[in-house]
Length: 493
Ligand code: NAP
Ligand code: MG
Image 1 (cartoon, helix red, strand yellow):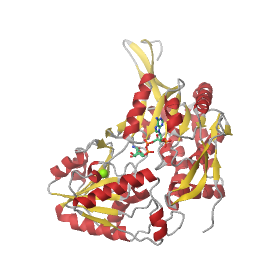
Image 2 (cartoon, rainbow, N blue to C red; image 1 turned 45 degrees about the vertical axis):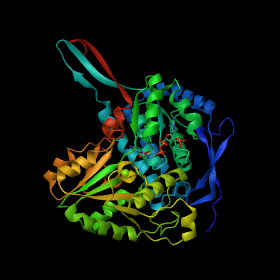
Image 3 (cartoon, rainbow, N blue to C red; image 1 turned 90 degrees about the vertical axis):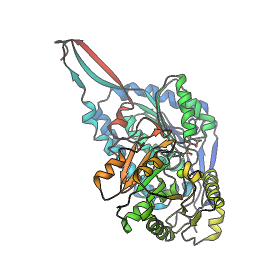
Image 4 (cartoon, helix red, strand yellow; image 1 turned 30 degrees about the vertical axis):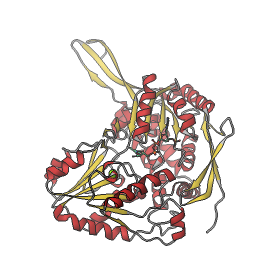
């Protein structure tokens, strides 16, 4: 196979690509071949955080003074610019696969679809421009909104670019300027994409910091210029973010982990198309999706059918290097996550339940060396196993039979998480009845996950899955403060 030259990515501060002031970089390796260097990433320090936050603070008033329509025009320009150079786009997609592990098709989908998110958010300009008016007596009042100020946007490694699409255009159209911090586990394609966006805007509106959160995380979150934090990542770090934000009384939106239940009712339509959706719901991106279906509860009368259907599809998968067009599942992104997933599978095996590790592996040497795990089904496990209780974030899913609908709802809700969920049935009324009882921010019907997501709808979780919402109109006004302007009746309106 042709070896690619290592790439480098830089910071973007105040309208310029730049190195970290210290000159430091860190190496990024390929999770399919952990000894292969993909490139060097600029490693920001505290002094770079200060420059980025200061640039965003200075740029903010002018950006906020533009109309929503003017800012929407910028979003549309960004959407075009990101797709303008097909060759550059393909280089970025290939780099994304090499640094991340995800297969080319998914890397391509993620990098191409970010433009759709910018276009979609631009469409809200008209609605955002409308103030609410209340007439008296006793007062006439205009209820308006103002941007919060500089937003810190933190994204995880699993879908870094799509997740930016759920917060970055929203922050911008609201009139905020931003400092973006990707995860050190997958920063290169994100840095290049954010750089292209920033090039289209006035200096300081988008600033980018790459580097380790151990060095720049808290300095960014606690910088006095930061007026709102939008964080996507783990529950553990999310709690820490909220504590750090408390010191400056900065509002947070937290999109955290999930352990989504899918409930397959007695009458569900289970044809090839349904099994395909079900498979992707759990195993797309090697299962490294916040809103993946992570627990499958099936009516006992359909249990064997679901096990057989998913076994058939999982067996047909080709596991290997995501850069090869024939591969349908790549490695896990990093060694730590690989360890989490394989230890859950080991625990399930030791408990004595049936564990099916499926799929074809054309290159065994590669498989054994990289962070690979075959798509794995854990059948009728003990409900206290970690693969049931915890977020696996990998290509393994437990399948659990139930007897009654009430039992299924109780099992689904018996979780510290509450991100998404799904109900699979032919009966619309029953689907709604069950959905309304699920403690989750989103319920998909007869599907589950990113392919079923309506980006007009707010997205976020109950319980430990988060605080606040991204996406939709709600995800935009989350970047704003309400502002009431009033006078005695008859004077203002
Ligand atoms: P993570 O370890 O919590 O890291 C998330 C991001 O936070 C990374 O960019 C990380 O940077 C950064 N970070 C860590 N400590 C920080 C600090 N003190 N200050 C500022 N930033 C800090 O999560 P992950 O392992 O990348 O992502 C997987 C998790 O994200 C899963 O639980 C998944 O469910 C969740 N997730 C949720 C959603 C959702 O929308 N609800 C979407 C996707 C993923 P470094 O990499 O440099 O440490
Ligand atoms: Mg789980």
